[in-house]
Length: 438
Ligand SMILES: Cc1cc2nc3c(=O)[nH]c(=O)nc-3n(C[C@H](O)[C@H](O)[C@H](O)COP(=O)(O)OP(=O)(O)OC[C@H]3O[C@@H](n4cnc5c(N)ncnc54)[C@H](O)[C@@H]3O)c2cc1C
Image 1 (cartoon, rainbow, N blue to C red):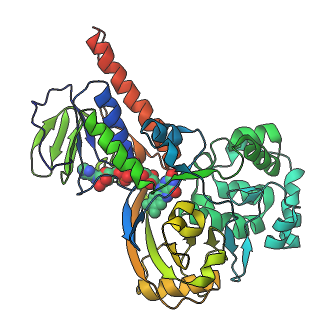
Image 2 (cartoon, rainbow, N blue to C red; image 1 turned 180 degrees about the vertical axis):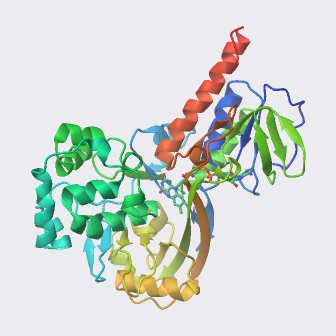
Image 3 (tube, helix red, strand yellow; image 1 turned 90 degrees about the horizontal axis):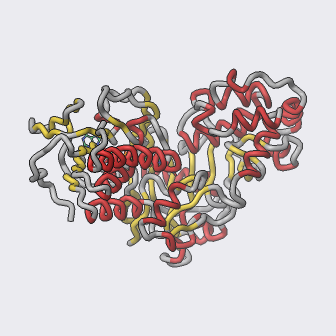
Protein backbone atom coordinates (compact mmCIF):
# COMPACT_ATOMS: atom_id res chain seq x y z
CA UNK A 1 0.00 0.00 0.00
CA UNK A 2 2.26 2.79 1.23
CA UNK A 3 5.66 2.29 -0.35
CA UNK A 4 8.80 4.33 0.17
CA UNK A 5 9.18 5.29 -3.49
CA UNK A 6 9.81 8.61 -5.19
CA UNK A 7 7.07 10.25 -7.24
CA UNK A 8 7.42 9.00 -10.80
CA UNK A 9 5.51 11.67 -12.67
CA UNK A 10 7.37 14.71 -13.91
CA UNK A 11 7.00 17.27 -11.18
CA UNK A 12 5.02 20.05 -12.78
CA UNK A 13 4.42 23.17 -10.70
CA UNK A 14 0.78 22.07 -10.60
CA UNK A 15 1.73 19.32 -8.13
CA UNK A 16 0.85 19.77 -4.49
CA UNK A 17 3.55 18.65 -2.07
CA UNK A 18 2.39 17.94 1.46
CA UNK A 19 5.04 17.73 4.18
CA UNK A 20 3.91 15.28 6.88
CA UNK A 21 1.33 12.48 6.92
CA UNK A 22 -0.43 13.41 10.16
CA UNK A 23 -4.16 14.00 10.11
CA UNK A 24 -3.83 17.55 8.71
CA UNK A 25 -1.57 16.52 5.82
CA UNK A 26 -3.73 13.52 4.98
CA UNK A 27 -6.88 15.65 4.87
CA UNK A 28 -5.26 18.00 2.36
CA UNK A 29 -3.87 15.09 0.32
CA UNK A 30 -7.23 13.37 0.07
CA UNK A 31 -9.23 16.44 -0.86
CA UNK A 32 -6.78 17.85 -3.37
CA UNK A 33 -6.38 14.42 -5.01
CA UNK A 34 -10.16 14.16 -5.24
CA UNK A 35 -10.18 17.49 -7.08
CA UNK A 36 -7.85 15.90 -9.65
CA UNK A 37 -4.55 17.51 -8.68
CA UNK A 38 -1.36 15.41 -8.51
CA UNK A 39 -0.32 15.26 -4.87
CA UNK A 40 2.65 13.76 -3.06
CA UNK A 41 2.96 13.48 0.71
CA UNK A 42 6.48 13.23 2.15
CA UNK A 43 6.55 11.68 5.61
CA UNK A 44 9.77 11.58 7.59
CA UNK A 45 8.92 8.57 9.73
CA UNK A 46 8.07 5.02 8.70
CA UNK A 47 4.35 5.32 9.43
CA UNK A 48 1.42 7.59 8.70
CA UNK A 49 -0.71 9.28 11.36
CA UNK A 50 1.68 11.48 13.35
CA UNK A 51 0.00 12.03 16.71
CA UNK A 52 -2.77 9.60 15.77
CA UNK A 53 -0.94 6.42 16.65
CA UNK A 54 -1.54 3.05 18.23
CA UNK A 55 0.25 0.59 20.46
CA UNK A 56 -0.59 -3.09 20.91
CA UNK A 57 -1.36 -3.72 24.58
CA UNK A 58 -2.96 -6.89 25.97
CA UNK A 59 -3.54 -8.04 22.38
CA UNK A 60 -5.49 -4.91 21.35
CA UNK A 61 -4.44 -1.86 19.34
CA UNK A 62 -5.12 1.16 21.54
CA UNK A 63 -4.37 4.83 20.97
CA UNK A 64 -0.97 5.90 22.22
CA UNK A 65 -1.54 9.65 21.63
CA UNK A 66 -4.91 11.36 20.86
CA UNK A 67 -7.76 9.11 21.99
CA UNK A 68 -10.79 11.40 21.61
CA UNK A 69 -11.94 14.64 20.01
CA UNK A 70 -14.07 17.59 21.09
CA UNK A 71 -17.50 17.37 19.46
CA UNK A 72 -17.85 21.18 19.11
CA UNK A 73 -18.42 22.22 15.53
CA UNK A 74 -19.11 18.66 14.35
CA UNK A 75 -16.21 18.66 11.84
CA UNK A 76 -14.44 15.53 13.09
CA UNK A 77 -17.63 13.46 13.20
CA UNK A 78 -18.55 14.74 9.70
CA UNK A 79 -15.15 13.66 8.35
CA UNK A 80 -15.40 10.25 10.03
CA UNK A 81 -18.86 9.82 8.54
CA UNK A 82 -17.60 10.71 5.05
CA UNK A 83 -14.90 8.09 5.49
CA UNK A 84 -17.46 5.39 6.31
CA UNK A 85 -16.77 5.39 10.06
CA UNK A 86 -20.19 6.70 11.21
CA UNK A 87 -21.05 3.43 12.95
CA UNK A 88 -17.80 3.54 14.86
CA UNK A 89 -18.38 6.97 16.42
CA UNK A 90 -18.74 6.41 20.15
CA UNK A 91 -19.25 8.49 23.27
CA UNK A 92 -17.29 7.82 26.44
CA UNK A 93 -19.19 6.43 29.41
CA UNK A 94 -20.91 9.13 31.47
CA UNK A 95 -18.92 9.36 34.66
CA UNK A 96 -17.31 12.37 36.31
CA UNK A 97 -13.60 12.87 36.09
CA UNK A 98 -11.91 13.12 39.50
CA UNK A 99 -9.56 15.68 40.90
CA UNK A 100 -6.70 14.89 43.23
CA UNK A 101 -6.13 18.10 45.16
CA UNK A 102 -2.83 19.34 46.58
CA UNK A 103 -3.37 17.49 49.84
CA UNK A 104 -3.80 14.25 47.89
CA UNK A 105 -7.56 13.98 48.51
CA UNK A 106 -9.69 12.70 45.58
CA UNK A 107 -13.02 14.34 44.74
CA UNK A 108 -15.24 14.26 41.66
CA UNK A 109 -14.79 17.33 39.47
CA UNK A 110 -17.82 19.62 39.98
CA UNK A 111 -20.46 18.58 37.47
CA UNK A 112 -21.47 21.98 36.03
CA UNK A 113 -18.10 23.32 34.95
CA UNK A 114 -16.03 24.14 31.91
CA UNK A 115 -12.23 23.78 32.06
CA UNK A 116 -12.82 23.37 35.81
CA UNK A 117 -14.53 26.81 36.02
CA UNK A 118 -17.79 26.31 37.94
CA UNK A 119 -21.06 27.67 36.53
CA UNK A 120 -22.28 28.24 40.09
CA UNK A 121 -19.73 28.61 42.91
CA UNK A 122 -22.55 28.02 45.44
CA UNK A 123 -23.12 24.46 44.19
CA UNK A 124 -22.47 21.92 46.99
CA UNK A 125 -19.94 19.94 44.91
CA UNK A 126 -17.94 23.14 44.33
CA UNK A 127 -17.96 24.12 48.01
CA UNK A 128 -16.88 20.58 48.95
CA UNK A 129 -14.05 20.69 46.40
CA UNK A 130 -12.55 24.11 47.26
CA UNK A 131 -13.81 24.91 50.76
CA UNK A 132 -16.20 27.67 51.91
CA UNK A 133 -13.71 30.55 51.89
CA UNK A 134 -12.63 30.05 48.28
CA UNK A 135 -16.28 29.47 47.32
CA UNK A 136 -17.26 32.79 48.92
CA UNK A 137 -14.57 34.61 46.98
CA UNK A 138 -15.76 32.96 43.77
CA UNK A 139 -19.27 34.31 44.36
CA UNK A 140 -17.95 37.86 43.90
CA UNK A 141 -17.88 37.03 40.19
CA UNK A 142 -21.63 37.62 40.10
CA UNK A 143 -21.27 41.25 41.30
CA UNK A 144 -17.82 42.43 40.16
CA UNK A 145 -18.07 44.84 37.21
CA UNK A 146 -16.98 43.13 33.99
CA UNK A 147 -13.89 44.52 32.29
CA UNK A 148 -13.68 44.37 28.53
CA UNK A 149 -13.33 40.62 27.78
CA UNK A 150 -10.27 41.49 25.61
CA UNK A 151 -8.40 42.47 28.76
CA UNK A 152 -8.10 38.81 29.81
CA UNK A 153 -5.39 37.26 27.62
CA UNK A 154 -5.30 33.87 29.32
CA UNK A 155 -7.59 31.46 31.13
CA UNK A 156 -5.54 32.12 34.28
CA UNK A 157 -5.94 35.92 34.17
CA UNK A 158 -9.71 35.61 33.68
CA UNK A 159 -10.34 33.09 36.45
CA UNK A 160 -8.04 34.80 38.98
CA UNK A 161 -9.75 38.15 38.47
CA UNK A 162 -13.34 36.90 38.43
CA UNK A 163 -13.39 33.93 40.82
CA UNK A 164 -10.13 34.18 42.75
CA UNK A 165 -7.02 32.08 43.19
CA UNK A 166 -8.81 29.27 45.10
CA UNK A 167 -10.84 28.28 42.04
CA UNK A 168 -7.82 28.82 39.82
CA UNK A 169 -5.42 26.69 41.90
CA UNK A 170 -7.77 23.95 43.01
CA UNK A 171 -10.07 23.43 40.04
CA UNK A 172 -8.84 25.11 36.89
CA UNK A 173 -5.08 24.47 37.12
CA UNK A 174 -5.35 20.64 37.41
CA UNK A 175 -7.84 20.49 34.52
CA UNK A 176 -5.78 22.77 32.26
CA UNK A 177 -2.59 20.92 33.20
CA UNK A 178 -4.22 17.54 32.49
CA UNK A 179 -5.83 18.56 29.20
CA UNK A 180 -3.39 21.11 27.74
CA UNK A 181 -0.16 20.26 29.60
CA UNK A 182 0.32 23.88 30.61
CA UNK A 183 -0.44 26.39 33.33
CA UNK A 184 -3.69 28.42 32.99
CA UNK A 185 -1.67 31.67 32.73
CA UNK A 186 0.03 30.29 29.60
CA UNK A 187 -3.19 29.12 27.94
CA UNK A 188 -4.69 31.78 25.63
CA UNK A 189 -8.37 32.24 26.40
CA UNK A 190 -9.43 32.10 22.75
CA UNK A 191 -7.65 28.81 22.23
CA UNK A 192 -9.19 27.14 25.27
CA UNK A 193 -12.71 28.42 24.70
CA UNK A 194 -13.30 30.26 21.43
CA UNK A 195 -16.81 31.37 22.46
CA UNK A 196 -15.90 32.62 25.96
CA UNK A 197 -15.43 36.33 25.17
CA UNK A 198 -18.83 36.60 23.47
CA UNK A 199 -20.48 34.62 26.27
CA UNK A 200 -18.90 36.95 28.87
CA UNK A 201 -20.19 40.00 27.03
CA UNK A 202 -23.70 38.55 26.81
CA UNK A 203 -23.90 36.97 30.27
CA UNK A 204 -22.08 39.61 32.35
CA UNK A 205 -20.21 37.22 34.66
CA UNK A 206 -17.88 34.25 34.30
CA UNK A 207 -20.21 31.76 36.03
CA UNK A 208 -23.13 32.82 33.82
CA UNK A 209 -20.90 32.62 30.72
CA UNK A 210 -19.91 29.05 31.65
CA UNK A 211 -23.58 28.13 32.15
CA UNK A 212 -24.41 29.65 28.76
CA UNK A 213 -21.61 27.82 26.94
CA UNK A 214 -22.57 24.53 28.57
CA UNK A 215 -26.22 24.98 27.61
CA UNK A 216 -25.24 25.79 24.00
CA UNK A 217 -23.18 22.61 23.70
CA UNK A 218 -24.55 19.13 23.10
CA UNK A 219 -26.07 17.33 26.09
CA UNK A 220 -23.83 14.81 27.79
CA UNK A 221 -20.16 14.36 27.04
CA UNK A 222 -18.42 16.97 24.94
CA UNK A 223 -15.96 14.50 23.56
CA UNK A 224 -16.29 11.42 21.38
CA UNK A 225 -14.03 8.74 19.97
CA UNK A 226 -13.91 5.91 17.49
CA UNK A 227 -14.56 2.26 18.26
CA UNK A 228 -11.14 0.74 17.64
CA UNK A 229 -9.33 4.00 18.45
CA UNK A 230 -8.73 7.43 16.93
CA UNK A 231 -5.71 6.10 15.01
CA UNK A 232 -8.26 4.56 12.62
CA UNK A 233 -9.10 8.06 11.40
CA UNK A 234 -5.54 8.39 10.08
CA UNK A 235 -5.32 4.95 8.48
CA UNK A 236 -8.73 5.37 6.85
CA UNK A 237 -7.82 8.86 5.61
CA UNK A 238 -4.55 7.55 4.14
CA UNK A 239 -6.39 4.78 2.30
CA UNK A 240 -8.94 7.29 0.97
CA UNK A 241 -6.18 9.68 -0.12
CA UNK A 242 -4.34 6.90 -1.96
CA UNK A 243 -7.53 5.67 -3.63
CA UNK A 244 -8.09 9.23 -4.85
CA UNK A 245 -4.60 9.17 -6.40
CA UNK A 246 -2.38 10.73 -3.73
CA UNK A 247 1.10 9.31 -3.36
CA UNK A 248 2.40 8.89 0.19
CA UNK A 249 6.15 8.48 0.53
CA UNK A 250 7.41 7.23 3.88
CA UNK A 251 10.93 7.75 5.30
CA UNK A 252 11.22 10.92 3.23
CA UNK A 253 12.27 13.84 5.40
CA UNK A 254 11.92 17.28 3.90
CA UNK A 255 15.05 19.25 4.68
CA UNK A 256 13.96 22.60 3.27
CA UNK A 257 11.02 24.15 1.45
CA UNK A 258 10.42 27.29 -0.58
CA UNK A 259 7.64 28.63 -2.81
CA UNK A 260 8.78 26.40 -5.71
CA UNK A 261 9.03 23.05 -3.89
CA UNK A 262 11.06 21.04 -1.39
CA UNK A 263 14.53 19.56 -0.93
CA UNK A 264 14.47 16.09 0.56
CA UNK A 265 17.08 15.08 3.13
CA UNK A 266 19.00 13.13 0.44
CA UNK A 267 19.32 16.31 -1.65
CA UNK A 268 16.56 15.67 -4.25
CA UNK A 269 14.58 18.67 -5.35
CA UNK A 270 10.83 18.14 -5.93
CA UNK A 271 8.84 20.99 -7.40
CA UNK A 272 5.28 21.92 -6.56
CA UNK A 273 3.12 24.05 -4.34
CA UNK A 274 4.09 23.23 -0.74
CA UNK A 275 1.66 22.64 2.10
CA UNK A 276 3.50 22.19 5.38
CA UNK A 277 1.69 19.81 7.69
CA UNK A 278 4.76 19.14 9.83
CA UNK A 279 5.46 21.74 12.48
CA UNK A 280 9.05 20.61 12.77
CA UNK A 281 9.65 21.37 9.09
CA UNK A 282 7.97 24.77 9.12
CA UNK A 283 10.98 26.27 10.83
CA UNK A 284 11.96 26.17 14.48
CA UNK A 285 8.82 25.57 16.53
CA UNK A 286 8.20 28.66 18.61
CA UNK A 287 6.54 26.88 21.53
CA UNK A 288 6.36 23.16 22.00
CA UNK A 289 5.65 20.77 24.80
CA UNK A 290 6.67 17.19 25.44
CA UNK A 291 4.29 14.73 27.04
CA UNK A 292 5.12 11.21 28.11
CA UNK A 293 2.24 8.76 27.86
CA UNK A 294 2.49 5.46 29.73
CA UNK A 295 -0.11 2.93 28.59
CA UNK A 296 -0.41 -0.13 30.82
CA UNK A 297 -2.45 -3.31 31.06
CA UNK A 298 -3.14 -4.46 34.62
CA UNK A 299 -5.07 -7.29 36.21
CA UNK A 300 -6.79 -5.77 39.25
CA UNK A 301 -10.30 -6.69 40.35
CA UNK A 302 -10.48 -3.47 42.40
CA UNK A 303 -10.45 -1.37 39.25
CA UNK A 304 -13.68 -2.95 38.08
CA UNK A 305 -15.81 -0.47 40.04
CA UNK A 306 -13.97 2.40 38.27
CA UNK A 307 -12.99 4.10 41.57
CA UNK A 308 -11.91 7.28 39.74
CA UNK A 309 -14.61 7.21 37.05
CA UNK A 310 -13.10 7.61 33.59
CA UNK A 311 -9.98 9.20 35.02
CA UNK A 312 -8.39 11.73 37.32
CA UNK A 313 -6.52 15.02 37.06
CA UNK A 314 -3.77 15.57 39.57
CA UNK A 315 -2.86 18.96 41.02
CA UNK A 316 0.74 20.10 40.78
CA UNK A 317 3.02 19.01 43.61
CA UNK A 318 0.92 16.22 45.20
CA UNK A 319 3.29 14.13 47.29
CA UNK A 320 3.77 10.55 46.09
CA UNK A 321 2.21 11.11 42.64
CA UNK A 322 4.25 12.15 39.63
CA UNK A 323 1.61 11.66 36.91
CA UNK A 324 -0.47 14.67 35.98
CA UNK A 325 -3.45 12.73 34.62
CA UNK A 326 -4.88 9.23 34.59
CA UNK A 327 -7.29 7.89 31.99
CA UNK A 328 -8.97 4.64 32.95
CA UNK A 329 -9.42 3.62 29.33
CA UNK A 330 -11.47 0.48 29.93
CA UNK A 331 -13.85 2.48 32.15
CA UNK A 332 -14.06 5.27 29.56
CA UNK A 333 -14.57 3.26 26.38
CA UNK A 334 -17.08 0.40 26.38
CA UNK A 335 -15.62 -1.11 23.19
CA UNK A 336 -12.28 -1.55 24.91
CA UNK A 337 -13.80 -3.23 28.00
CA UNK A 338 -15.80 -5.52 25.71
CA UNK A 339 -12.55 -6.79 24.20
CA UNK A 340 -10.91 -7.77 27.48
CA UNK A 341 -11.65 -10.16 30.35
CA UNK A 342 -13.48 -8.41 33.25
CA UNK A 343 -10.45 -8.32 35.57
CA UNK A 344 -8.13 -6.80 32.93
CA UNK A 345 -7.81 -3.03 32.59
CA UNK A 346 -6.05 -0.56 30.36
CA UNK A 347 -4.91 2.71 31.89
CA UNK A 348 -2.96 5.68 30.54
CA UNK A 349 -0.90 7.98 32.71
CA UNK A 350 0.53 11.26 31.41
CA UNK A 351 3.76 12.75 32.68
CA UNK A 352 5.53 16.05 32.10
CA UNK A 353 8.83 14.20 32.21
CA UNK A 354 9.64 10.57 31.52
CA UNK A 355 9.98 8.78 34.89
CA UNK A 356 13.39 7.25 35.66
CA UNK A 357 11.83 3.89 36.48
CA UNK A 358 8.56 3.86 34.52
CA UNK A 359 7.39 0.43 35.67
CA UNK A 360 7.73 1.29 39.38
CA UNK A 361 6.41 4.83 38.99
CA UNK A 362 3.33 3.84 36.97
CA UNK A 363 2.38 1.08 39.42
CA UNK A 364 2.91 3.38 42.43
CA UNK A 365 0.95 6.24 40.82
CA UNK A 366 -1.89 3.90 39.90
CA UNK A 367 -2.09 2.64 43.49
CA UNK A 368 -1.99 6.16 44.92
CA UNK A 369 -4.52 7.67 42.51
CA UNK A 370 -7.09 4.86 42.55
CA UNK A 371 -6.56 3.49 46.08
CA UNK A 372 -6.57 -0.01 44.56
CA UNK A 373 -3.78 -2.50 45.40
CA UNK A 374 -1.81 -3.12 42.20
CA UNK A 375 0.64 -6.02 42.28
CA UNK A 376 2.36 -5.22 39.04
CA UNK A 377 1.82 -4.31 35.43
CA UNK A 378 1.03 -6.92 32.81
CA UNK A 379 2.45 -4.78 30.03
CA UNK A 380 3.72 -1.21 29.72
CA UNK A 381 4.40 1.07 26.77
CA UNK A 382 6.03 4.46 27.32
CA UNK A 383 6.26 7.12 24.60
CA UNK A 384 7.21 10.74 24.55
CA UNK A 385 5.41 13.09 22.19
CA UNK A 386 6.14 16.63 21.13
CA UNK A 387 3.19 18.91 20.58
CA UNK A 388 3.65 22.25 18.88
CA UNK A 389 1.61 24.92 20.58
CA UNK A 390 2.74 27.77 18.38
CA UNK A 391 4.73 27.28 15.18
CA UNK A 392 6.95 29.61 13.20
CA UNK A 393 4.94 31.14 10.33
CA UNK A 394 5.80 29.46 7.00
CA UNK A 395 7.57 31.40 4.26
CA UNK A 396 5.51 33.43 1.79
CA UNK A 397 4.06 31.27 -0.99
CA UNK A 398 3.67 28.16 1.20
CA UNK A 399 0.56 26.98 3.00
CA UNK A 400 0.50 25.45 6.47
CA UNK A 401 -2.09 23.27 8.17
CA UNK A 402 -2.48 21.50 11.53
CA UNK A 403 0.02 22.18 14.28
CA UNK A 404 2.35 23.64 11.63
CA UNK A 405 -0.22 26.45 11.40
CA UNK A 406 -0.39 26.74 15.22
CA UNK A 407 -3.76 24.98 15.24
CA UNK A 408 -4.05 22.26 17.87
CA UNK A 409 -6.66 19.65 18.69
CA UNK A 410 -8.62 17.68 16.15
CA UNK A 411 -11.81 19.78 16.45
CA UNK A 412 -9.88 22.81 15.18
CA UNK A 413 -7.36 21.08 12.89
CA UNK A 414 -9.92 19.19 10.80
CA UNK A 415 -12.08 22.16 9.63
CA UNK A 416 -9.04 24.43 9.12
CA UNK A 417 -7.21 21.81 7.00
CA UNK A 418 -10.37 21.20 5.01
CA UNK A 419 -10.73 24.93 4.35
CA UNK A 420 -7.15 25.09 3.01
CA UNK A 421 -7.74 21.99 0.87
CA UNK A 422 -10.96 23.48 -0.47
CA UNK A 423 -9.17 26.70 -1.46
CA UNK A 424 -6.44 24.74 -3.28
CA UNK A 425 -9.04 22.54 -5.00
CA UNK A 426 -11.04 25.60 -6.06
CA UNK A 427 -7.87 26.94 -7.71
CA UNK A 428 -7.52 23.67 -9.63
CA UNK A 429 -11.12 23.83 -10.80
CA UNK A 430 -10.78 27.51 -11.75
CA UNK A 431 -7.59 26.78 -13.72
CA UNK A 432 -9.32 23.93 -15.56
CA UNK A 433 -12.25 26.08 -16.52
CA UNK A 434 -9.90 28.78 -17.80
CA UNK A 435 -9.88 31.00 -14.69
CA UNK A 436 -6.85 32.27 -12.88
CA UNK A 437 -4.69 29.98 -10.79
CA UNK A 438 -3.13 31.46 -7.69
C1 LIG B 1 -0.60 12.32 24.05
C2 LIG B 1 -1.48 13.15 23.16
C3 LIG B 1 -2.85 13.20 23.42
C4 LIG B 1 -3.67 13.98 22.60
N1 LIG B 1 -5.00 13.99 22.86
C5 LIG B 1 -5.82 14.66 22.05
C6 LIG B 1 -7.22 14.59 22.22
O1 LIG B 1 -7.71 13.89 23.11
N2 LIG B 1 -8.02 15.32 21.38
C7 LIG B 1 -7.49 16.08 20.38
O2 LIG B 1 -8.25 16.72 19.64
N3 LIG B 1 -6.15 16.15 20.16
C8 LIG B 1 -5.32 15.47 20.97
N4 LIG B 1 -3.97 15.50 20.76
C9 LIG B 1 -3.44 16.41 19.72
C10 LIG B 1 -3.67 15.89 18.31
O3 LIG B 1 -3.36 14.53 18.24
C11 LIG B 1 -2.76 16.68 17.38
O4 LIG B 1 -3.03 18.08 17.54
C12 LIG B 1 -2.95 16.32 15.91
O5 LIG B 1 -2.97 14.92 15.71
C13 LIG B 1 -1.82 16.97 15.11
O6 LIG B 1 -1.95 16.63 13.75
P1 LIG B 1 -0.99 17.28 12.67
O7 LIG B 1 -1.32 16.60 11.40
O8 LIG B 1 -1.06 18.76 12.72
O9 LIG B 1 0.50 16.94 13.15
P2 LIG B 1 1.21 15.56 13.47
O10 LIG B 1 0.24 14.53 13.85
O11 LIG B 1 2.30 15.89 14.43
O12 LIG B 1 1.83 15.13 12.07
C14 LIG B 1 3.00 15.69 11.55
C15 LIG B 1 3.72 14.65 10.69
O13 LIG B 1 4.80 15.28 10.04
C16 LIG B 1 5.92 14.41 10.04
N5 LIG B 1 7.13 15.23 9.86
C17 LIG B 1 7.74 16.03 10.78
N6 LIG B 1 8.80 16.65 10.22
C18 LIG B 1 8.85 16.25 8.93
C19 LIG B 1 9.73 16.55 7.84
N7 LIG B 1 10.75 17.42 7.97
N8 LIG B 1 9.49 15.96 6.64
C20 LIG B 1 8.46 15.10 6.47
N9 LIG B 1 7.61 14.77 7.49
C21 LIG B 1 7.80 15.35 8.68
C22 LIG B 1 5.83 13.73 11.39
O14 LIG B 1 6.56 12.51 11.40
C23 LIG B 1 4.33 13.51 11.52
O15 LIG B 1 3.92 12.27 10.98
C24 LIG B 1 -3.11 14.72 21.52
C25 LIG B 1 -1.75 14.64 21.25
C26 LIG B 1 -0.94 13.85 22.05
C27 LIG B 1 0.53 13.75 21.74
